[in-house]
Amino acid sequence: MSSVREPAAHAAASSGALRHVLLHLVTPLLMCLGMGLAYLSAFVSPEPHQVPVAVVGSGPQTQVLAQTLKDEGGEALDVRTVADRGEAQELLRGQELSGAFVPDADRPELLIASAASDMSALAVQKVFTPLAAEQGAPLTVTDVATPVEDDPTGQGLFFLLVAVSIGGYASVAVVGGAGGALPMRLRALLVAGVSLVVSLIGTALAGPVFHLAHHSLWAVWGLSWLYAAGILAIGTGLHTFLKRWTTLAMMVLFVMLNFTSSGGLFLPHLQNGFFGALHAFWNGAGFVEGLRSVLYFDSRGLGGHLWTLVAWLAVGAVALLAAAAYERRGRRAAALPATGPEEAEEEMEESVAV
Image (cartoon, rainbow, N blue to C red):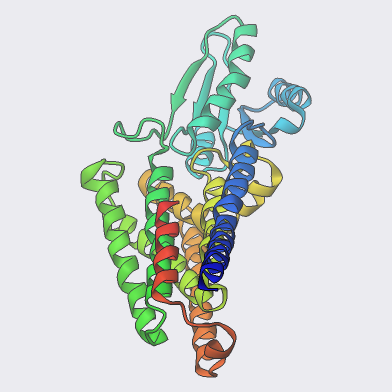
């Protein structure tokens, strides 16, 4: 009789283990699908739309040239005229333009600010180089805001974003999962402490290690702390409600939608409308654009980016308060069983491995 029961018990155990594996495969497979959809739609085929450019000068010839560019560029270009070269430079340094063309029979010139976006600078050069050739003169390109020599493409800030983001969202599984038995006030302190450490690592990488930032390291640190704290606070608060699905939620919020809309590789006018719209208020965009503003553009527009990061941190604070209230009412034990050591370990490994 026992010999009959043993194979049946073994089969039941194997079936349970298989269901367990298949259930845990749902998260990485959804991550695979989401990452593919997000990255391929955001980065594979950038198309310019409403790229802000200007023709420098006044008078009928300038107006005709601007209108011609507008007609030929269609939706790709947003063409205006500016009175003089100085005004064009100011607009470029304020990141209101991607390029400004100065017509001249002998020396046509294109003003760019490659620190704002190397890809946008290349895009406007492709527009105006043939125009200069039609005038029978080579195009002179003047860069009014260049990246540091250690980061010639200006894309180092994007990879700094990746590093700080991973430090933030991977730590959520530890603070929210393994730390789930701690009172929320202690988890909130951990959020502040861990985000501080993550920001110090990011600042070290940006400064003395890779020299992306040659000045304003205090500002880099402050922006990094605000950004990481927002991610950790939101994730820790969500963990009370989502449990093992928190990893997937964090990937969606702070990788799939975040990296793609940050402007670290392509500015909104080289992306589709969805990611361009997210760029206006997503936290990764606030971080990258805030760093650009501090490092290359004399902190112009920094206030708006700071408010973006503060708003996300405020959302995180609300999430922590909501989670604390939920747990105080005792609903956590009834509706959401406490995460056991094995499940917490699986969640941490899954989060860090992404």
